[in-house]
Length: 318
Ligand code: SAM
Ligand code: DTB
Ligand code: SF4
Image 1 (spheres, rainbow, N blue to C red):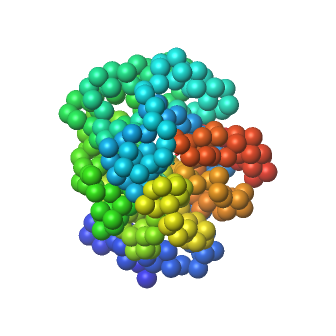
Image 2 (cartoon, protein in one colour):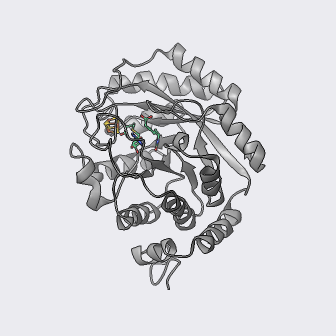
């Protein structure tokens, strides 16, 4: 049974190989994931990023999961935050122990004048001694370079789901548009944060297809967020059937095995998970989280709850 990259293109992961991993007995899969994890990462360390929505709601896109789409979202629409508010939030994140500060904007993509405002935020956050990440939607020529020059470390832009499932979730842009922006980000020398969402009613085959796309990129993303859908009221996916928790852990484990060097980020949906499920995700190779009470519009565990869990598990925040 093929459970590793095969054949003439040694770095490529076939869907068959990924399926074979998914089908392993749970304990065998977690054992494999732990082996890979320990070869490439500190076994008991989890990286902390804090998120801030710098521009909320009113997005023209129709992503079926998103509370910020003007088409169906119920998120309160807000203008771009002031630089002072961003600096205050970043300072607080640093005081609480985050090492990276991620700023998200509900845009299809930024205008050049938006880029100038965000560039000032990036520089100010960087000056506080934090790593910087932004997620602003699709980029036009030259914009990635401008962000890089301002001190940007990571750009988050998710493939979100399998190519064959994409147009059932999003119709206002294509997955190829996402790849185009990822190419611009790589071209500017910015590190890539790229993953997806599960729990949208997709099949296991679709989850595998998403992982194959990520793992087979010329350089896999440095950071791979695996989001568990937070069902947002009013969105087309508000009533999507929740994913089986063990299938979610398998998704993390297979991501760990097929992208050994990447940070695997246990992302949205942690607030709805108990401590035991999160612990299984760490055991399966997740080694970064979003830290702080809020994601963009959705909830996240209290910082104190995360610190108490780390203490019980002997995990060091990084
Ligand atoms: N507008 C930008 C974009 O689409 O890239 C940036 C913000 S967008 C909210 C960032 C990512 O958050 C999405 O690509 C999706 O993976 C994730 N996300 C959004 N809503 C979510 C939800 N309800 N549950 C889980 N993940 C979600
Ligand atoms: C990512 O993959 N997950 C984060 C971050 N990148 C920007 C966002 C999760 C959003 C969850 C829903 C919300 O807060 O509105
Ligand atoms: Fe807009 Fe991003 Fe939400 Fe899609 S995911 S509706 S692009 S904010």
